Image (cartoon, rainbow, N blue to C red):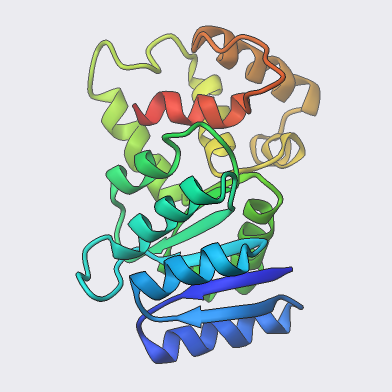
Length: 215
């Protein structure tokens, strides 16, 4: 699996390269700034990009914007963004086109190699990988408003959607909540119905469900 990596701190970049190579990823480019990232993504068209949000020259959201621009030029390009802090706007921008192949993790997750690598692979395969802390903060914000998009969901459906937002499969959700996969499927169907997400061959309703509460 081919990876483009963007991280401005040399030690962390080198550590990520070594970690991913240890899990049989091929690093086709490892860059430290936004313009170089955009060129590498468009030229190399990797299976997945692992991108630090803040890169030179602006050290604001240069990495994120380069990744979003690359996705416009290479539709569906899988991108996993790493951030030091939870920024709701970043998650919202990543999911704005309603397609999969997107992840947003806090950098602390890198210290759990198996979890991090599993997230990289999930994103590369077109899924989503949202950091649990990001999901928790977004749910907490939504709960503050009496007319929030989640108002119609039951507590159990909220739990299922929270785990769905992390990118978990039905089997993983069932295991986490100690329920059957059949129950997960039922709850998921209820979520889609309550969030007005009709059956569609073109849309990933899991991604759209996550996007619904991000809004």
